[in-house]
Image (cartoon, rainbow, N blue to C red; front, side, top):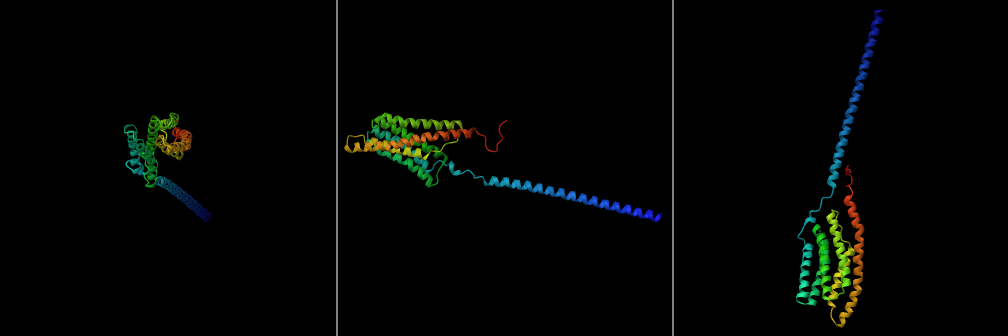
Length: 260
């Protein structure tokens, strides 16, 4: 009897020890699992943070050169505006038609020159993108009005050119006032403006009774037609671009929460 009792006690002790050992093993396993989960979560947060930092680091910084003011192209644009005054004085003040024609031709050439210099010397600026087309429109409008008033071109042609300049200018100002992004000048519009700036001085040069002047006037009429076509093509091409700019202004930024 005593030996059986002792044997049963030893067995109970063994079973208890085994149960305690198994329980301790499970607790250790759960602890290790929890530690592993914590480590993985920390690694994920670190990777996410590194990813955000990398994304911010790869965003292209704004080019500080765009904020420059006194660049060669901008000086040429301002000089072009000054030449308008010289042209008007020569034509109406000194009555020097030939000299006025030369000045107006040089003024038109600088329209091409400042854009070429800006690209060649990497001097494209925010101011220049606004100043260049503004100077173009002022030079063209002043030249057209002056030459029409002088009598070298019919007012119908002048009204067509001036109407297009007025509509485009007002549209650009309205876009700027509404907060829409600025629309870059189209090459076809630049080509039309350059052609008109070349044709109107030729009309002025041909305003004489010489035989060569009649031939020059005929050639100029042939050249002015495609220049007008380019100008009005650009004016109509600006319409969908303006609509898109207005739509982008009202659309919420990507990834931003919509206002409640």
